[in-house]
Image (cartoon, rainbow, N blue to C red):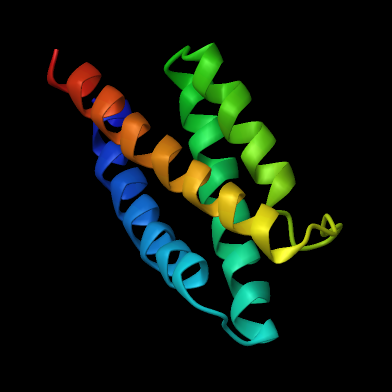
Length: 108
């Protein structure tokens, strides 16, 4: 019962983070926005990795762990804007796919 009660929280975290990421990918934002974005995404991906571990989804655990490291706010990878845009859209795609996979799994 506890595992199912935290799934909606995961979707809310993904939704908030995805909206921020779309704004980052569409147009240039201030540096403080990108710093906030890295904090939000790192927390969302770390939480997603923990949930993936709890429900024994190893592939998603690896994907979310890599994305949490990529978006970590402490040791920021120095990528140019075009690579960050690719990373942003890849992350959005991963979240959308994960949402469908996790939702379908929670229904069964």
